[in-house]
Image (cartoon, rainbow, N blue to C red):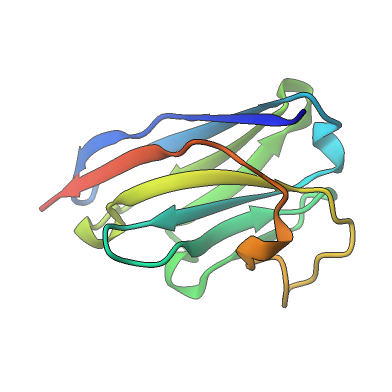
Length: 127
């Protein structure tokens, strides 16, 4: 059974940075596409960034340039570096893994394509 555990969330002032980590176990991590999603109170879960099995990266337009996703397959870990944080970035951030090798730019941002999810880590950005 694949398990994903996020860490690195917390409280930060606007303009600050955080790096989230997601450690995976129980599967062939290097073959997964990995994604980060977030959900703010009263809002739907939304796509943040993803990285496929060949390390191609994808971002939601509003996060491009401020967020960077990366992976270290030797550590079974995916990272989300978040810079220039804004109060509207406040949310619970979730890591997810997809076993699909056929995700495209049109589908990799869809939560329905992901098979495994972490419990989430809270990110709070104060103004």
